[in-house]
Amino acid sequence: QVQLVESGGGLVQPGGSLTLSCAASGFTFTSYMLKWYRQAPGKERELVAAITGAFGMTNYADSVKGRFRISRDNAKNTVYLQMNSLKPEDTAVYYCNAHRNGFGLDYWGQGTQVTVSS
Image (cartoon, rainbow, N blue to C red):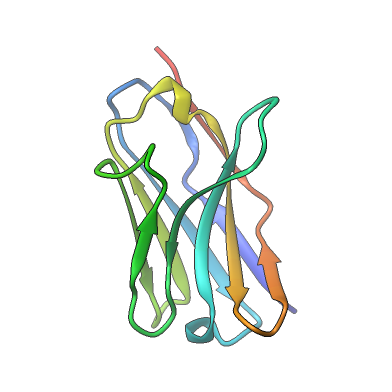
């Protein structure tokens, strides 16, 4: 059974930091690209960051470049999103996604709320 379980969300003041974790199980972790998406109220879900399976190449949305860092620990089947210098506009539900190119395989976590507010 495939599972992606996010944790680490919460309330943080502007300028603060949070680290999200996503623990995966039920599939071959290293064969999948891992991504973090977010969805703010009234807005479409947007891709925040992605990291490839074997070589760990990363990509970021322009809005988070220089502030967020995605990483993965293949030994622990876990992907992380370190978020620094948080802004109110980063407030959203953050979702973990596992995607395997060419196979039509796409798995999602349940989401974790991040609220940036003073």
